[in-house]
Image (tube, rainbow, N blue to C red; front, side, top):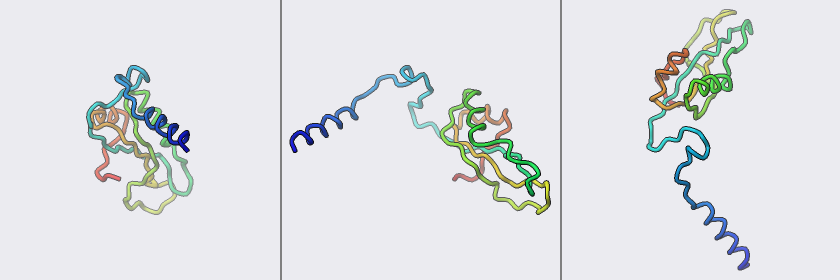
Length: 120
């Protein structure tokens, strides 16, 4: 029992250690203060009746933005929540939504993304 308690204390001690400069160790951008984040979106290009499959996925959107130097926290499928005419070939309203730092909005907008008015 004492051995088990000793191992648990050692395990917890390892979790408390500090790293002084994580961005140097990992080579990634690290937020030092609580920078505001926002959600952006882009239509996925899909059309009703299967006339066009989605041309943008969360994975391709995240890759595109990361290659542009934008930190991506989360990427997911979504929908604009608006009514669309029920006609084959019409826009489905399906989107790809991505969470980024608010300071990167200009870079994302230059790649066709728009800021979301609603927060998920």
